Image (cartoon, rainbow, N blue to C red):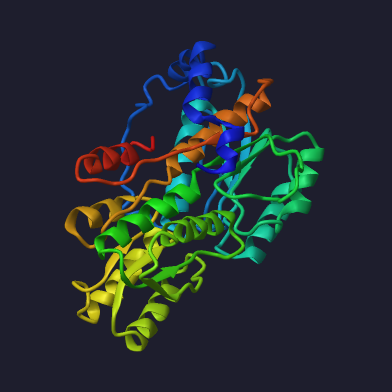
Length: 359
């Protein structure tokens, strides 16, 4: 368990408090006829750029929505080229529509420079609240501080914006150390506790990636007979992953396992490995448990994945941001957003909950 967890609360505790205050009455009033559990098809979705994505959510009516009045929110995550981020965008916009929160998107572009420009644009406008997943720690501090100084609540999602306390309203974070350790442990068990392995990292300035690497190191400390061949970053970019793994397969004839900081990268490597005819020799595991990864676990392409609950984090940011914007006090500075390891028993349920933009 990470240190942050000891300082915060489970999301279920906050949700329980909201229901006790009659929050759900407002939700269902605002979403009458909208179909709260309406499903979606992520498979055909094409990530949008900031220029392509018009403000997607409209007020859901119902007397101003669940919070008594229409609200305007700005969101940004690391980049819509990552399926986890694209799924989060869809969840935030859908829940915003249901709850009367107009969500405007600022794509991080999987680039520190692109996201900094996007957040500068965001900070030049007025919002009821904003929610941000930073591509790199301490890269967005100045524009975020300007928004906080204007009295705009800022919800931090998944990764750390600043190593210092700059007045963030709350941090919605999965336990990245746990996720890294549990996937690594599964891989090491599958190879009998010995052999040569590779870790493919996300962006090194991304605190989620840093903690996922920490989880890997915690797991490998128990296995003196495992050798780490490489720990290169691929910045969440599937094209970089493909190039890295093409080189690895030439350079290393005896790779036993690959651990990846997200499923997009794991599946990109799986294609390269299959093309080389080595898919039966190398076991793979990733993080996020996106629908394609759940399918890959079921068919054996991946050994395992663990859910980083993109939908819950993003719709949680809509709900808690709106609470902060409408006067709710006592919001904890840290809220754990946990997710399960994918198994044969829970795979179908996880898939269903993601289709409904709930988990």
